[in-house]
Structure formats: structure tokens, C-alpha cells
Image (cartoon, rainbow, N blue to C red; front, side):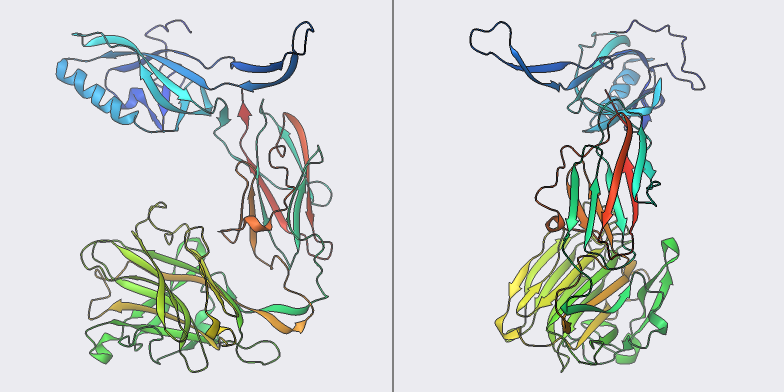
Length: 524
């Protein structure tokens, strides 16, 4: 335990004690009147648990391994209040602030590093006094501390194929990787100094020996090109999903963050229809035609990115993407809508056509900006839909619900239709969902009768991310654990103190992807 600091000692350049605690972004001294850190203990040498084995009558034991134990950090403090009311108010604020779990703990004498801890206990506070000293205990299940800065590096050796990192931490760190494809590619891999390997995709996949291939009908990462692309047609036909829906409105684009544009409903068209119930909106459609001129496909994949977020309670709006047959009837559809005129409840519905068109799955969510509430907020919005013969697959929050519809096996998707609408005669200002956008769409025909094999695992411009800390793998923001090899050595793929080299691997016939690595330094 450290000695008490002198009450006049301050951390340089700050009006704080040298060991002042920043808890979840707030120095306690700046939030709690009369609070002052006196000393801190538990940040020194970590406790180690040794596992050994007795071997018969031999002297001593056989060492097996060591394990670092959880850490408890004790903060001694002083609290001085003018009166009993101020004293109680200070503790109310302190209790509220310390209620967070797995919070970041940063100390003023080491502002470039943080711990992760939860308040565990306190010493007894002397009764009947408004000037006291006491202690707070923080339990750190993860005993290590981490650099506040997260480092991002690119491969600099071997013609941009090898990362060379001088790692200054004192304990191993697990990095994350990103690979942005510059062409079709079948394999992404990483090999470290210890010859531990992470591999994703198929090492044996070739680029030109396929009897079937996938073709992109369109691939918009954003909607910049939509107004100029003749393939996307304004469609004023019947609503593919709801018989009461009208399509007399107008779609347009709007600039959003990052210099991109999104597709939105500019005019619901209500004044042209005098339609008072159901959805009023606008629709676009694109014909599904492969490179040989063949119309329609029994195997089709569509990736979408949506932003559906309210700004006020009671706003309404919808957006939907559907696969349709030659007569315009719905084969399958993803619908996102909110017709709650008072609250803030929205729905995502999965529809299937065929002999008995129906909603097969329906989910509720709150269209706020919070990640935990809304999968279609500004930061995310990824979803996809796929028809492979009789199999129809959707996406919802990390899961891929799939349905078998035998009567749709040979039915071709002849068009993809996109609809954005407002409910009934409601206005397009305060009553309309504030962010009801399509930010991108990519349509791919699978199994085009032209090549001898299936498409490559990765397409140009797709982004693969790999996180060694938890083994998560995503492609285009969607979870894809199936891409990883069974023998991937996650536990031993780490940065160690000193110089580390990590080689990047791709298919030998592919253009080298753009690789980046992120990591935080870890300290004992």
C-alpha cells in the first residue's frame, strides 16, 4: 500500500492528486464535491498461481504452468462536506457513478493506460462525521492494463505482405486484422513468427476452372449512381406486398456522412392517389439478367444496408426489398416498418410467397440510435436475403433463418423491387421516420450456367475482419465463422514483447488485398 500523499500534492498540469482515478471517463474529484484521492494500492506486481505435480517419492514437485490471478485495486480517499446534506449528496453521486460494470480505470500518474474493473466493496465510513477517510475496492477479473491508444499498422516488408511491429507491451496482445479485397480471392491467411496460422476461405480455390459462376447484377456500396443508372427503373406498378399500397411517390438521394448518398422517399404521392389507408410511397425495380442475356435466376443473393431510425415518438414509415417472379408476384421479401403512431416500436418481417404467401418471422425492435436496440442504426444496417432453389434465407441480428418452400424451387427471380413508403395521409416531416434510407444494395446471380465451379469466397471490395481476442470473423459486417479453418490457432496467435513479424497470405492468382492490423499494448 502506498503512503498517504501530502494534501497539497498535485499531478503536474492538472488540478488533481497524482493518483487521481478517472472512472469511466470522469475524474472523481471533478464530479464529487469534497472528494480527494489519498493513495492507491494493488497496481504493483501481479499475483501468480503456480500449478505443479507431485511425482511419487521424488523430492519437490514438477512445475507445470503459471496463471495470473485477478487484481484488486484499493483507492483510499478523503471526503469533506460542509454539512450532513452535502455529505449525503456527495455519496449519492459517488454511488451512481460507481454503479457501472467492467468500467475503465485510468490513474492520473499513468494516463496512457487503463484497467477494466468493477467496484467490489468499501471500507466502513465513520459515523456522525462530515470529514472522513475511507477506501474503495475495484475488482479486476482481467488483471492486465492496456494502452489507451489503439495502434493501426500496415504491412511494410516483403512488398507489403508482412507486418513488422515493435511491440512495447510487457504481456501478449491479441490483434485484429482487416483485409479489403482488390479482386476476386479464395484465401486470406496470416502466419506469425512462431509459425502459428490463421486461414480463411479455401486454399485450393482457383479462379478460372468453374462451370458455374456468380455475377453481380449491381453492386452499390452507396446510392451515388442510382439516379443515373438506367438498370434501376422507377416502378409505379402494384405494391408487391400489400394490395392497398400505392407507388405514386418519388424517390431521391440525400447526402449523408462520409461523402456518400442514400436513397430516400422525397414525396409519398398521397396527393396523387387520395389514398387514406395503407402505405403510400415509391418503388424501383431492376431486371435480373445474366451476362449471356438469360432472364431470371433460381439462385439469387442480395445484400442491403438500411438506416431506419426515428427522431421523434410516433413517427411512421417503411422500406422493403423483394424478389419477384415474371408476373411481379412476391417470392420473398424483407420488410422493415413502423406504423406505431404514438410509441417507438418497429418491426422487421420475413415474407415468403408461393402457394400460400405469408409472414414466416416477425421481430420487434426500437428504432433508436443505440446499438443494443436497433440493428439498422447509423453504425450498422447490414442484412441480406438469398434464394437457392427451394431454400429461402434471411438475416436477423447474427442469425440466418432459412425456410424450405418446394413449390418455389424452379421459380425464377425476374426482378428485385425496392419500396419506401409513409403510412396513409401522414405528412413527410415530423410524422415520418427521420432516417428511412437505403444506403447500398448488391445483387448477385449464383450458379450462372457458364463455368465449372462456384464463385470465389471473396469478391472485389469485400471487407474481411478477424479478431484474435474472441475468434470473431465477419465479411461485409456479417458474421462468417464458416470461413475459418478448423485448425486456426487463435490462442497462440498474439503479439509478444519485442519485434513481431506476421506474414499475410492470399490466393496466388488474386490481386493482393489491402491489409491493416489493430492492437492495444498489454501490461502486467
